[in-house]
Length: 598
Image (cartoon, rainbow, N blue to C red):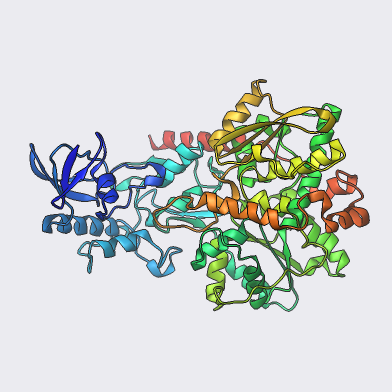
């Protein structure tokens, strides 16, 4: 079929929108709520206006939800279109708190870009949010992130990703008219809601309405204190994510630059969370073997992802006995820094401040869990996201692009393996575990090292591998919590054929974590490239199996004894709690308030 956009003939298929065809043919139409990576076209912002002429006459329509028809004439920048687009943006700005200088998206805001795109030079409408309406609140009750509804433009992207991608549905559209707002269901606040703080909503928010709780000032306080020994570490995926913040090609390994930048800002010790990932494999792998041999609860789910743990505790607590008790790499690293590392380096644990750089928002929430503290002192003192770390370097004037790379310090906790590196992508934990479990059961290394059936980007992947005398073992891998719920419900129904299941809450795994870079107009860009970068790093490593890491061998021979020993259990394992009652209490409280209002 054929139509005309700005007098140029364009072909299209039945049902295609004006916006889709225009962009395919190189015509720019400004838009805000339309977000093709989520297949999200609600038509709420009304900015993508165009002028069309067809059998029904000439009129203005929103291009994102209006299909082209045979012979239609479309004008994307007539004077009337431009006037109405500017007016629409003015009204959005009037319904938006315009304190841009203090906003986390300042200079990186899609709404600011939109104002420029429509040629806005002044705003004729008063800001109606000088006295915020009910529901347009600033909610900082959650541990890891905030909600500033005064900056919300109600594009509904966050609602879509929470409901359709993650299957959590913690965010809802409440109220009506000017009082409509994005709420947290029937909960009185964010902390008490169904939210599991995965941060995927932050990645798609076009403004500063959603964001991580910034802890950079706390980090600066630690760096400035002569009484504090700062220990920094960063997750496997961060080395291929940090470059996004500074214009490097997607998937570029900037590990050495991160180490150098940390030293430049005054870090005392810089180690690698990959070491802790290797420990995780030793503990989780031997825990799996113990369950298989001793008739323990199977299938066993991985426990590395804190958003998955939050989801299990809040939404499907009956699955908790199936989840490994092994801490995540961050949790293990925190425990060992303030015990093993402190002992080896003759440091006072009370003076150590342990700071993690993570691609994950839920890691902040994990660090605050009382189970991961001793005598009320957290093992991980501060967690900052990739975005926070980039802001910190800019605040301190570090030229990340030009800084020469440096190696890690080597104080007993920096050597790592390829198995640890691939933790950063979906399937990586499973493959790393298989390499070690196979070696233990078969008495020899996995042939070829790589377990190709475990690799890929499908939402759910399954494989059957022979692990020594144990024979064929069925494994499952999923990313995205909608997929995790399906596998968990299958287990609870007694219909699961699997022995071991890996779950990553974020689609793609940690390479697409809620604390990674926000790329305008994109959702998880260059996922395959970043995944391949981690696989390439694995291939280049001297050691590729966790049990072959010489520092891991030293840790167990000199300190822990053996995997899953009593000491290892005390330091490196944890427990989970049924938190579904929090949601029930929120619903009951909301019903009570509604009754009082009535």
